Every structure is written in structure tokens, then in C-alpha cells.
Length: 267
Image (cartoon, rainbow, N blue to C red; front, side, top):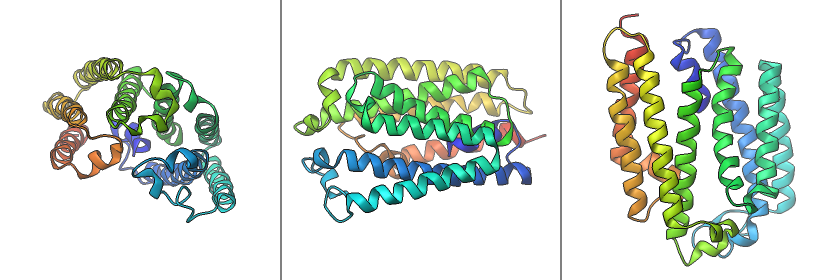
């Protein structure tokens, strides 16, 4: 959904032509991301077999063959690149960069401390950049800083949860180079940067009403709630928290409502 972030903040998402470009870019990223997850699960299959929940993944469980997974990944990846290039050639280049980044992560960066966090966070940032490229919308520095800091926060949180998940921590080699204290410090730093950058972004916007300024509150509370869930042992699967925790869902809904009110109410 980061693909829609830039056109939404630029008040352009409801234009039919822009909406179509966003949908096509969204589909292209779904195809490419699916391809890279297949490759990643092939690379992780031996480690996943020693994990309490990841051993149930189709490739690790032997339900999906390595040959079929890699063939499907090739079809999905090429299809996504073709679609992205058809939308805009520059979008095709961004998607190619994302594909190269994620594949190199599966093969190399996942074994290098710090680089593994940077690579995953950069993947989130490229999604947001793709939304701007697909719709020919310039991206502000504040926007990119919010996305970058938010991405680092989520990735550091995942590493923090994995470290707390001992004795399964040995399934990811780079975890030996991290500590709970370092990941907690990185999360705090990233959260502060994200909130400050978002506040600067909100106060700089001109809108009819205090909607953008008010949206800072659920934004900051969302980060705080997520961090609190990590401290009690959740977070190895971030999507489980984001999609199924009622307070997080409520804060997300409130933030979306206030943000779109700032974009569209009174305009």
C-alpha cells in the first residue's frame, strides 16, 4: 500500500488516470514481491525447517518443489517488470532495482549484520518511490524521511522479536551480531525520527482545518502501541500485529480518516 502513499499525499489519488497508474504499479509490485518471497523461501528452506512456525511454509515442508518455486518466481518477476515498464519506463527501472535488491538480500545481505536491516528497509522505501514515479509526482524529503524511519522501525522491531524468540534465534545467522538493547535503541531512534519528520510534514501542509496536525497523535500512538506489543513477545510476523491487533487497526483507521480529511475536506 506504500505505492499509494505519494499520490494520496499529493491530493491526486482520486484522479482516474492516477488511480489506474497506482493500481497497475500495485499489481506489478505484488507480482515482483511474490517472486522474491519464493526465492527467499527457497534460500531459507533449511533454516525454516528448524523453526517452530516457519517449518510449515510450503517449500520448507516439502509441499512445493524448489524447481516449481523458482520457475514460478521467474514468471512472476518478469511479468511484474513488464507491467511496470508498460506503465512508465522509469517505474520499470525502480522495480528492477527492487528485484535486484531483494534477490541480493536473499543471497548475500541477509548474512551481513546492519546490511540486512538496511536492505529490507530500502525495499519499503522503493515501494513508496515507485508510487511517485508511476504517477509522475515529486517526493519531498520529509516524505522520504518518514518512510525510511518507519521502515527501519519495523525491521528493527522484527529483529528484536526474533531475538526474544529464543531458542529459535539461531535460525537467522545475523542475530548473533545484534542484542535486544541495540535493537531497542534503534527502534527508539527510528520512531523519534519518524514522528519528528511526520510532524514537520504535517505542520508544513496547508489545509482547511487542523486535520494534518491532529493526525500526528494516532501516528505516534501507533508506533508506541507496536513497540509495547514487541516488549511482551509479539512481532516476529509484523503483518499479524498490523492486520489483527484491534488497537493498531483502530489507530490506523483514525489516522487514515484524519489524513484524508486534511487532503480533501474543504478543497
